Length: 211
Ligand code: SF4
Image (tube, rainbow, N blue to C red):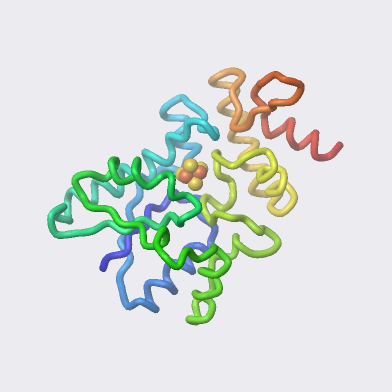
């Protein structure tokens, strides 16, 4: 078994610790694939700000580098890819399976006994493996990716990140503003109040949260 980790370069420091600890416990090496750009650097290059409808970062920073590595090192007829989505996201399995063809894909966390995320995290803890910090206070997130600043996350998570990681939020806010200066009225978030939909910049979310 080979563990493959696609590094977006903005992961939480404890995610790297978890990756190292897990690999050590399993006695397996981690292959790190990396495009070399952060999500915001990618958005600048492709002149498109990722959001919860379209997130080019997922494709270019994770799927493409992983696929390049697979094509260079793994015979599709002699390997199975294990993808770590759980049964709450089982509706995604067919498109993921199609996307990774010709490799065979399996989803162990979508199989019985259908553990909840809490049960899986407790299982890790019982094995002596501390799960990533983002799952626990003060973050309490359901996904431990991109340090909590995922462009697919909604207003509620970004407002929460402003409270728990104001420095990280300020960095994302400044970079979003740079992109707005270049691209016009675009934003990661959308305001859908009062029956209309419009971009909601992080700076405006900050003002709203303060109010
Ligand atoms: S976790 Fe979110 S921000 Fe990070 S690469 Fe995936 S879609 Fe993009």
